[in-house]
Amino acid sequence: MGRVTRRQLTDLPGTLGLPAALALASILAALAFGLPALDRAVPAGRPVDSGLPYPVAAGVTVVPPPGADLDVTGTRPGDDRGTVLFRLGRVRYAIEVEPFDGDLTAAAVRLRQRLTGISGHQVSGTQLAVSTAGGLAGVQGGYTAGDRDGRYAVFVAHGLIIEVMVTGADADLEHVLPAIDASTRTLRYETAR
Amino acid sequence: MSDEVLPGVTRSAALVRQPAFWVVILLLAIGAVRMSQIAALFLTSYPFATVTAIGMFALLAVPFWLFVSELDFLEREPAGLRGLAFAWGGLVATSVSIPGSTALDNLIAKFGSPGLAAEWGAALAGPTVEEIAKTLGVVAIVLIARTQVNSVLDGIVYGALVGLGFQIVEDVVFAVGAVQLAGEGDRVQPVIATFLVRGFLAGVWSHTLFGALAGAGIGYLVVRRDRGRGHRLAVAALALLAAWASHSLWNSPLFREGFGDGALALLAVLLFKGMPPLLLVLHLVRRAHDREAAYYVAILAAVRDRDVITEGELRVLGSGSRRGAARRHAAASAGRQARAAVRRLQRAQAALAVELSRATADAALATGVDARAAEVRSHRATLAALGHPEAVEGARSWRHTASTVGTALLAFAVVWVALSALGDG
Image (cartoon, rainbow over all chains, first blue to last red; front, side, top):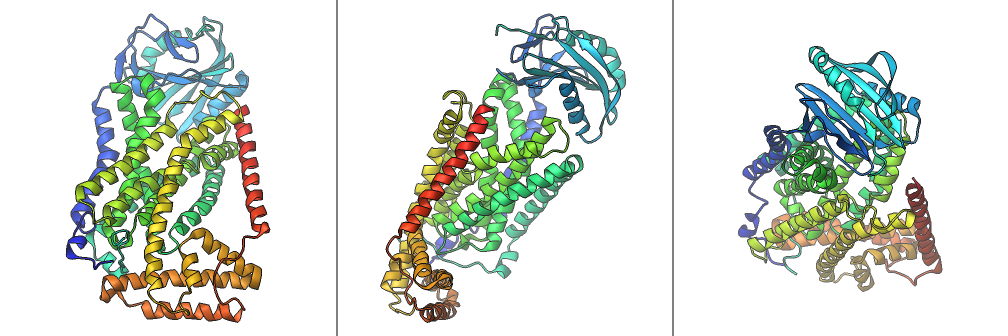
């Protein structure tokens, strides 16, 4: 065991002090702020064929509304669960599919509790029955999220829960809701996948 | 041998005079604010589940903390720096990783495809951001207290504690996220399920392990001055890569369904994904511990004072299992007080070895040798008064063997029940 020499005491990275600490903080800043900035700079929207069924997950498909873009940051397909996010201007149209062993009533309660569990979200209005062209039965309702309004719908079929969430400013929603409703009615479970 | 351990001491007064120290404190404060905001959101929406999650995972942290802290028995890291490492993992690395990992996952979807992000996003984005953020915690400790990272084992301990802090906070976030996803209100079932999966089954192979791997590299970079700077940087980079690869393998979809259903299949996946890094870290710990022990035992051997340490105790002090055997032997022959006295003697002998090593490196650091030697003699006198003058190991008892086998069987049974429940689920 020799004495600790001056060269050792000034070797990497112990005594670089403030510059090294600032470099360390810069790397953290690049991770915490640089990556999100780069993410925001790269467009997330992709054109999608509005007339063709889009595979969401687990055999569930939907025909996107005309003029919708696919937002790849909110879209994660999968064999047994997944999500898709479409954007129509400033309106978000999200569909989530996952395994579920309850009935429609339980599914609706679950979705409403998830909504109200988010700070500032409140369920509004009454809940109505809804069905799709493919025969899926569900319920739909509305909610508010701060200065934005929302619509939700939930379906249960073949051991899956299909949750639809639409959010946007009231004026924007007014223009696109008919097209989104029409799209929601195209939700279908394909048995042969 | 001379470069396996670099002794030194950091005084708190010197610590606060360093600008780097205040940069690290500022980063910790920013991390604390950010994580407090997240905790406040959780507490507002799910107070009972959040408090339960914090309580359960805090309890889980205790055995990990004790185990990691004991890894370096001979030269324990200061509690303040251990706390700083844990806080870095829980406050800084997490608050950086939440936005960073999400952004990188999105970029994978944008430059690749949503399908690629769904399959491989967790295996690529999470490890990339998180392993860098955690490893910087060990670098931060080197910057403010370089003399406290004086063996590869120190790097392993600090890295593991950074990983532990990250793991506990991430588990709490996941547990409350599971409550939100379940949509059943403020209930604890999702917290318990998360605890079972992430804390109990995945806890052993999680961030504590990855952090230890990366920390070993930083320890090597700092300590092995006998090697060139390029070589040491390459080893540190390799260790970080190993941590990344272990984390990536754990998160990857590989063998997700490859071994079928049921408890046995789940156990096979856990072992396949978790064993390589676990074995690697155990090998590194053993190697680093033995080298450090050989260094300190050699220093104590040079003292040649039977009141300080005997030949038999020199053999015992360098091995964790022998130290434990010596304490059990004391308990069997002279009662629980003797067991505690042996432990105190071993601690004092280790502390004396560290003081002597500092005195060897720099005479100005030799301030505590006499006090430590007096401490050792005091514990020796206590032990002698109890009728057990030497802290050496005895013959292996059937009771200890039976206890070890029983504990292993119980642990296996508990794991099997948990795996069966999850395999059927």
